[in-house]
Each structure stands twice: as structure tokens, then as C-alpha cells.
Image (tube, rainbow over all chains, first blue to last red):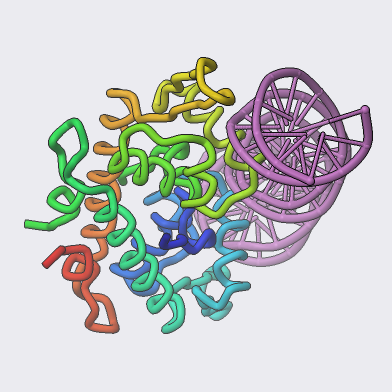
Length: 111
Length: 111
DNA sequence: TATGTCGCTCTGTGATGCAGAGTATATTGC
DNA sequence: GCAATATACTCTGCATCACAGAGCGACATA
């Protein structure tokens, strides 16, 4: 059975990774606003992603205040890719014999 | 931004829910073997899903030994459905402007 | 009747997730 | 010009969680 990267398979971190994947470089404050999360919580999750080399930081001190720009690294993007593939396979594994008649495969399909 | 049901967005529980969605009624031992997880761990996650009314148990004592059959409840199936929809939306939210040229939307699309 | 297996459930502990306090610099009001 | 507030984080402590393995009763086998 497919196992899911526990680093990415956590509510806030999945959102973080998905958002960074689409948005490129984002500041701490923007992330905080987008994800509606407390400072400390955001910091700790970013730290984990940075420690795993899924995310990198660029710190600017030249401006008015220090500004940190966060972005997915190449390996972060790869991990996200792998993670999404694992998820898709896992959900496809639930066959359409489900009593609801709902097939996860169809739900996951976009447009 | 879409938030993800923390009860389902956990590696083991996502697998558990997906497996139950496809397999119907499953015994403790079968779950343990399929998910390759320790007894205690499986028990604690099942307990959480049961407490949330996502999973129900049918305990048989008539046979050789006690046997517990676990299955998704209707609300469990609904929650899984909602969860998958939220996931899909979240990953679609990462637009194809990604620097890799990889679009999560395409990856999620099945066949 | 001792030994082992099955099918769980309970318990202890290290890790995790989280909010809010703390720090340093900058800006605004008086 | 100086207190008060704001910005941009970082650190700390605590409640909860995830997990492995011990425990337990019923049965099966030697």
C-alpha cells in the first residue's frame, strides 16, 4: 500500500506546499494571511520544510525591514509531485464498489 | 483557502478510510496486515475514527474467537468525499505558473 | 496442563502542533 | 523627541498525538 510522506501529509504543510508550488516566492506575512495561521505555528512548519530541504529562504535586510522570501526547492517540488501521485493511487485504490456509488477516481479528476 | 479535515489528513487514517471505502467490512487483523501497522497504533486510529462516527464496528462473539468488523459509516463516506474534493481544489490552486512547468492539475487528473 | 496463538485493548513515552510571549527595528502621534 | 504602536519574525511551553510493546482472556495444540 502506498505510504504518504508524513512531512507533506499534514493539513498546514500540504497547504503550504501547494501554495508555494503555485505562487513562487512568498513572504512570511503573505503566507500567514493566506493560510490564516498563527506566527509560531507557521514558523515551526516552515522550519520543518526547510530542514527537509523542501523549502528555501532568501532573507533580505536591505529594505525597510527584514523580509524573508520562501519558495519550494527542486526537491520540494519533486516530493510534492511524488506525494500527489501516491495520494491519487491511494484514492484510486478504493474501488467503485463503494456502497455510495461514488468513485474517488472520478472525484479526483479535474475538469 | 480550503482546509483539510485533520481527522482524515493523517497518513494512516487516510489509508484506513480509503481502504475501508473500497473494501466494505474488514477485520482488525486484515487492516493490520494491509496497512502494515502495529496493533496499538491501528487501535488508536480506529478509535478516533469511531469517536468521530466515521467508522462503525460490528463485534461478533459467536465464532471461534471474537471478531470485529470495521466499516465506513455514511458520514465517514461523506467526510471522505468532502476531504477528497478539498484536496483536489487545494492542489488545483497551485497554478501552472510553477517554475518547473509541472502542473499539479495535470498530475491529479486520472487517465 | 503447560505452551503457544489469536484478537484485540491499555499504557507509557517521545514527537508534534499550536498559541502567545519575546525581540529588534521602524513608523506614527503628540 | 519620545512614547505608543506596528511589522517581521523567533522562541518557549504546554496539550495533544502517534506509536510500540505489554497485557489479557479465550481457545488450540502437545
